[in-house]
Length: 142
Figure 1 (cartoon, rainbow, N blue to C red):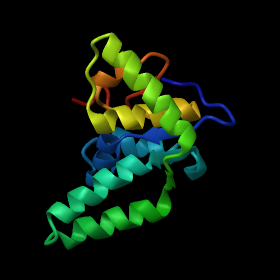
Figure 2 (cartoon, helix red, strand yellow; figure 1 turned 90 degrees about the vertical axis):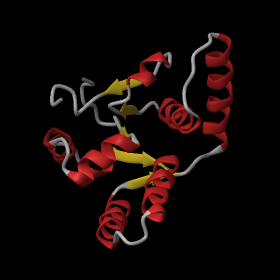
Figure 3 (spheres, rainbow, N blue to C red; figure 1 turned 180 degrees about the vertical axis):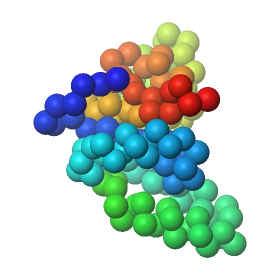
Figure 4 (spheres, one colour; figure 1 turned 90 degrees about the horizontal axis):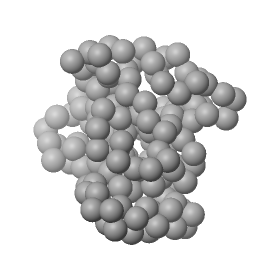
C-alpha cells in the first residue's frame, strides 16, 4: 500500500469505481473516505467506460443517477499530449516484451504513469507495467 504524501494522487480504475458505487467491497468506500476528495481522481478513459455501461442499459435510471453524481464528485483528468507520449512509449515497450494489456487498461496505466499517481485496481494485469504504482483496496475481501 502506498504511503500518503502531500502530493500523492490515487487514480481509481473502472473496477474500483464500480465496487464503490455498487458497495461490492466495503473496504473500497472506506479507503476513499480516508482520503481527501482532491487526492482521488479518475482518467477520462474510466469516465468513458462508466458512461458506456450506463448507455448499454438506458432503463437503469438509478445507475445513471449514481454514476452522474460520482462524476460530479470526483476529478476527471483529461487525456493530454503528455499522457499520449507516455502511452506510445509504454505500448511499444510492452509489445516488445510480449506483454498483453487491453487497450483501455493500457491507456489508464499510461495516464497514471504520466501523473505519477497510484493506480487503484483489482486487475492483476497492471502488475506487468514497469514503474506503475499499484494499490488494491479490494484485496483480502474475496
